[in-house]
Length: 111
Image (cartoon, rainbow, N blue to C red; front, side, top):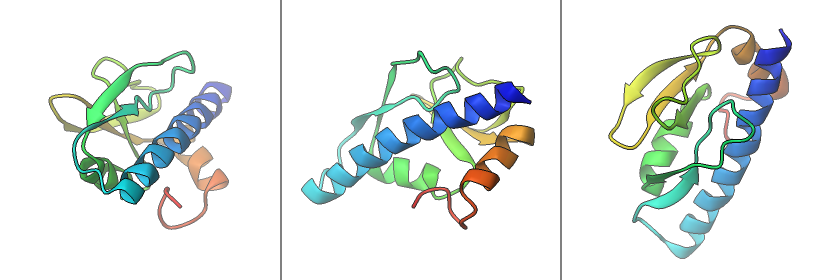
């Protein structure tokens, strides 16, 4: 399924950006909310989610979990597993999940 593969890759790009934001927060010992990128499947999305670094770490501690703005979830490739005031946590399913497993066979999604 090409759509799921492309969506998973888009989310990987967004996750990489967010990991860099998180690494900067660690270096500077920032605990207040920061503008993380929505990790939805839309490559054109440029929306931000205000999230504390510890909350971000909690989401990405689960390999197949991503944070998206409400309304950006895609039922074809993910299911909502948690709702917060600023964002949803979605879990990849089906081909999108298998794409992550192929691209990142480690225990945790985040390196």
